[in-house]
Each structure stands twice: as C-alpha cells, then as structure tokens.
Length: 483
Ligand code: SF4
Ligand code: SF4
Image 1 (cartoon, rainbow, N blue to C red):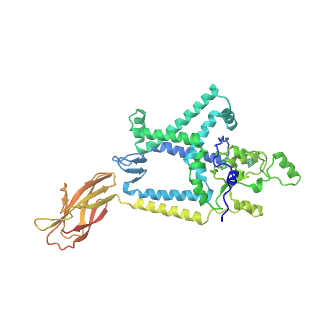
Image 2 (image 1 turned 45 degrees about the vertical axis):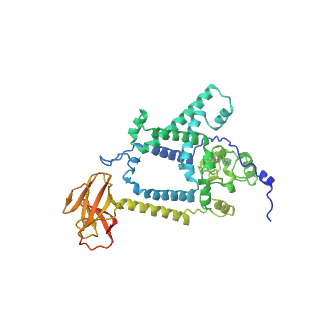
Image 3 (image 1 turned 120 degrees about the vertical axis):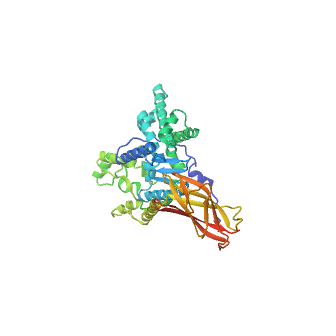
C-alpha cells in the first residue's frame, strides 16, 4: 500500500502562490546588449515602417508592399500575391517558422525569447523609457519607496504618457497592414476611418501598455507556453547562458580571493558582486543554474564580463556554454561544442525542403484557373430533337493584373456543342471569354451532344481554358450525364 500523503511535507515546500517581486533591471553595456539594441532597432523599424513601403503591381492592383486585403480576399507580399485558395502557403510558412524556432533552440536555447520575441523587444523599449525618465536601478528603487512629490508625479506622468504613445503607435501600425497605409493614416487623423480600425488600435494599445509596461517578465514566466515546450525539446548540447561554476566557485570577495591565491588556496573568480542579478530583466540569479525564468538574453554575461575586466580576471565566467563542458573541464578535459548533430540537421533539412517546395510551387504556379459545378437539378435535359444538354456553373480565374481572353474547350465529348450563356464571342464554335484583371468571372455553360452520340450513362469530361497569347492553360474535370 502506498504511503499516505503528509500535508506537512507539502507545507515544507512552501506556498504554491508567490507574490511578485518587482524587478528593477540595471543598465549594462557590452556585446549582447549591443546585439539586443541592434535587433530591437531592426524589428521595430520593420514593424512600424513596412506598411509605408510601396511596390508597383500595375494600375489595377494595390501598390502597398505588404497588405492583407480582406475585402478582396488577397494577401500581398512584395512580388507575391496569394488568393484564398492558396492559403496552404501559410501552412508551409508556419512549418518553417516552427522548425526555425526548434533550430534556434537546439543551437542556442531560448535565443528567440532573449532577442526577438515581441514581448522582450517591447518590454526592453519600455524599460529604456523608464530608465531615461526615472534613472537607473538604484534611483528607481529609491523613488518607488519615497514619497510622492510634484517632481515624482511629473516623472510618472511623463513615463506613462510615452508608454501610451508607443503602445498607441504599435496598435496604429498594426491596422496599416490591412488597408492602404497613407490613406488610412489620413482617415484616422480626420476621424473618417472605419470603426474597426479604432477598435483594433484600442485593443493593441491596451495590450502593449499592459504587457510591456506592467506584466513584463511575468508573461514569460507564467503565461507563455514556450519555456515549458522548450525545456522538453532541448538537449545537453544546446548552448545556454551558463554560470561556469567550475571557474567561479568558491566565490568570495576580490580581496579575500587575492589572499587565498597568495596562499595557494582555491579561490573562484566570482566576486559575489551580484551585478549579474542586478541587470537581469527577470530578476534571477544565473549562478543557481538553469531556470525557467531565464530568457537567455545574455545581459548577465555583459555584466559579469565588465566585472571580470575591472578585477583583472579573464572574461567568460558567465557564457553560452553547456553543463557537459563544465563537467569535462572539472575532469581536466577540453571543451566540446556540437552544433551539427542529428536534430540540427533534421530541423535544417525540413526548413530547406519546405522552403524549396514553397519556392518551386510559387515560381511555377498558374495565373489562370477554372472550377466547374454541375447543375444538380436537373442533371440532364433531353431536347425536342433528341439531343441531350447538361448545364454547369463555371468559375474562371485570372490572377494577372491585366485583361485576358481565353478560349473554352470541353474535351471527352465528340461533336459536343459548347455555349456560354450571355456571351456570343466564339470562333468556329469555340467560345471566348474575357476575364478582368485579378478577378474571377462566373458563367453558366451549356454542353449539348447530338441524339446520335453513343455515350455511357456518365462520361468523364474536361473543361479547358487556354490563353493563346502566353500559352497558359488550366483545366477542371466533371461528368456529362445522360437522362
Ligand atoms: S557578475 Fe560575475 S562576479 Fe559578479 S556575482 Fe555575478 S557571476 Fe559573480
Ligand atoms: S539570467 Fe542572464 S540570460 Fe537569463 S534572463 Fe537573466 S540576464 Fe538574461
């Protein structure tokens, strides 16, 4: 029989709820901080400015480089235009994105979280504003504990005003991806934009302000599923921000360490200055080992490198490393890094394969299409002269940005007469249809076979359209039914 659970054992583990401790990250300079600044500038620059980039697609099509055109059911991305029936490209894109995330994880742990995740980028921006107005870590702690003066109230108001401005701009940029950006900006400014645009700006202003201004590291720790998934996907060879305890311990003060070394006694390089904790945006101590809260931003590496430089010790006490290497060094062996291993090869191969398939299908896709729907009631009609007629609803699709004239043929029925209702254009009994630029045209087509035709009850037929100017064809299959 299993041992009964002792509630006291649970109580000893501490409460399940922990109140939030506000984090006051200190500013830091160094390689990883510079990488983060650069990536922040690139990501925000792309997000805010991309809707204003123009792309000439001819007079009949929108000239916005990236546009989600819901009213006309189109998605434009520079030279690519996707129709609703081509949404499978998004499936490919999602597969590539997921594999890229897995690959990043296999190489450098949570580098997505630390450098590119929107929550990190915007929180970093909000921290920069906070630091600019209220000062660095110590000053902010002191001000938060102090009394509310007029000056302090002014600072708080200025900070929240700038945060709201950034949040509003973030929401504003989002809606510009769904309409012509310059036109929508003018409509928004003159209060003539559709209500849904203001609604989305409001929603995104609120979420950005709340998530980046207040919830911050809590989003990564409690709300985001990726740290849990990532932990299950990682392996012992992935590079993670690691405190090299083989070098750092036993930690002690600079003076004590010098004394110990002078006596040939062991002294670690960690001078217990807590700078790595002070700069951490999630408020953790990396010296306690791998933790779910760590977003692998590398700022503690910069902080520690600065300290090591000051005390005259080699940098890299905290670095992107693996526990395997720590164990190897303790055994007197050299470091081993395995970036190329089965999982990185598999993820890269899937990215390349799906990417290549998408590129190939995009490059070779047809700009002409046809779909056919047989009339259900009646399926077939026998005419007074004994001939049999079937009717179809045919949809013609022209993905080019100019008018196209196509000839329609019905294959598989000898001596059949093809008639397009409402169009007399035909050459030697072959109907011609004009399709507008970037449009679909739906028409009823009547197919009639003479009484003398020897056909089965149901005959496979093919509707084929041909644009003879560019030698492009498209076809769809259906049946011809006898009464
Ligand atoms: S910054 Fe470096 S030296 Fe200072 S406490 Fe952290 S690990 Fe130790
Ligand atoms: S422990 Fe270091 S790498 Fe992890 S979140 Fe904190 S500063 Fe970033």
